[in-house]
Image 1 (cartoon, one colour):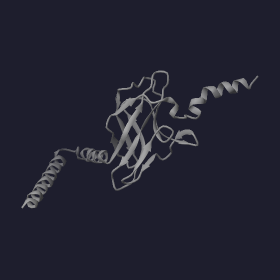
Image 2 (tube, rainbow, N blue to C red; image 1 turned 135 degrees about the vertical axis):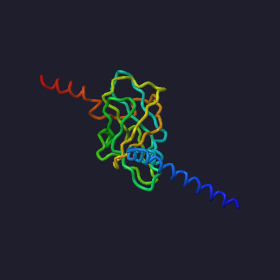
Image 3 (cartoon, rainbow, N blue to C red; image 1 turned 120 degrees about the vertical axis):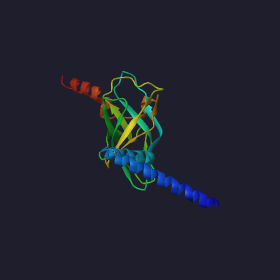
Image 4 (spheres, one colour; image 1 turned 180 degrees about the vertical axis):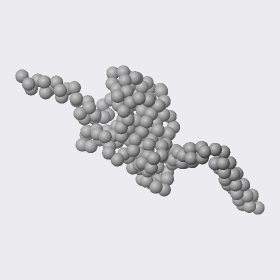
Length: 188
């Protein structure tokens, strides 16, 4: 008897969802935006950033990084092509570190079906550049991932923490000024 009641409950729930979906679609020409919202919500449940953290920064530098483990709970590979954050106006890039030098990752990050992809200091990470305002420890930032299929996923708010600066090698970005001074000295 119990299984029959559970089965009837599921049928009733499914019927209720179907009716709700039908009534939304009949309402107005906003049916396509309702469908987009649904797919975005479906994606949100399928891709997340575990142990996420944003590196705190002061006004003395205009870059910060976002780390964590991207987890894909779907049956298909998912590719993150770009991202934006609640910080607003800035340059947002997906980076990798190759032979100790950081560079933009072409093609983005592909997270295998039911797999994960780690973003960490000294490895792949999301980079915020050209942002002069401080990002204070204790704040939270919202990140929206843009996927290769045209959908986007808004991640749960990510905490800002102080992370040691020696953990990453920014390659040419760090040594840019010193390199120019070095070239100037050679012109004597």
